[in-house]
Image 1 (cartoon, rainbow over the protein chains, first blue to last red):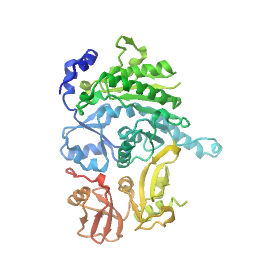
Image 2: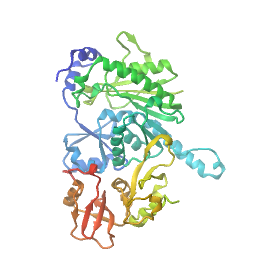
Image 3: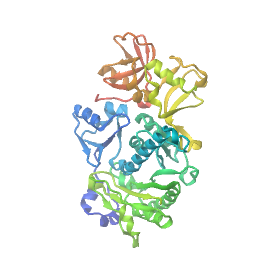
Image 4: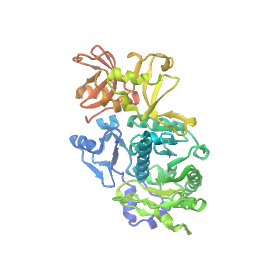
Length: 329
Length: 156
């Protein structure tokens, strides 16, 4: 596999260790999975795999995440039972950075329910159902099912996808993982009805997928700067719409599995320039990350864009990824 | 409420207590499918699906018109995999070789059927794990695993 010269010219100047970066792209990332806490627990999964003689590495930054030395994870009882979900490590990050909001939402719901149970406040309006969240481009459901696990199947996740065929995979994965708190919708996000607003939104946007080259080398065959520009235009429309759909005080996580700044920092910078959105620092203790880049092709971004994070494939032996977290004042 | 009769069925057939579903709500569709989903739905008017299918009422007709009978109601494997741990009756435990065959989608012939188990849809267990749904007819455990869930298990 030959990495295009243009690709190298774009990204080599941005990384700390170009040699390690380029060579990581030519090898496959290790097999990873997540313990599905709707059906099992990280400690039970670990014990079972150890009884099979697998050596697992548990991620410091997320104890439900494992890397296996044995690639036969897909032939285990735990895979059949949905006690584990095979998922790339970086794909677990967007739900993880929403964990505090999800847990806070659950606590509020419990408080509300307690209030409802006291006669004096029985008439006060309250939905008592916890956080309402939108997974805007949800199929095939890796992140939806993880969000449901973090929410303990409470509240409600609207899992939307434009592609009806991919919704079948989403539905299958939901049922296998024991996910109950989901409503599936099949809408173009740009025309998603405005009458429902969300406490939190995950926009894992369609992208040029450069970060997945390790498992899908064919990405390089189709790679072009024209495609990057076209995806960037779409992502700007999607992020504006997602921001509109938030309640005041709501949180938006934007993510891609690509390195292209046009699809990452430029999209976040666009949102900050067009709306009242405030960016928050993404912090994932235990994971090596780099801050968002300050400029690209001679165009400087707002300084706060550096609060977003990049994950280069050589830093943690994963796919490449980008994450940013914004709130609506 | 009619929807709740499915919970009566789960309680009568498997001893799964009704109370554990109190945080969720039942929905149903025209094809006899019963779904368990969130209590309060967001974006309900544009929903194409809600929650998880927990059972199907066989032989046509809306499930609401049917009295839940053990022969006509088929609990889903996905449902039994999460809530089967609460079952107190009508389950069969199988051994490792039988579990391999069951997961592959094969029928299993049992050596003996423990007393007190009713024929019809039952819960299949391996070790402490609810594997899913099976149909028991005398000593034959018929495989009703959804095709997409069948696989070759090497480690169990």
